[in-house]
Amino acid sequence: MVLPVRREQHSMAKYICLDCGWIYDESKGFPERGIPPGTTWNELPDDFRCGECEVVKRDTDMWQKIDF
Image (cartoon, rainbow, N blue to C red):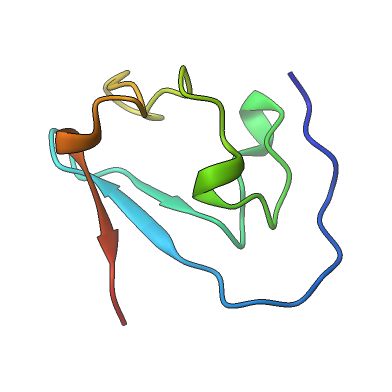
């Protein structure tokens, strides 16, 4: 699944996988899996998986938003 590149400006967030520490950065997306930069956490499909350990997004207890 390839999501369109977002053009609007808003604050980008980061989410950390609590199992392995991998970070999903909305501003960078995950191009290796067809997720373009600017794709927000809420726009990711529920079956999105961690880039390192394969934890699924719908396992909400395994992800935490990183506040700056």
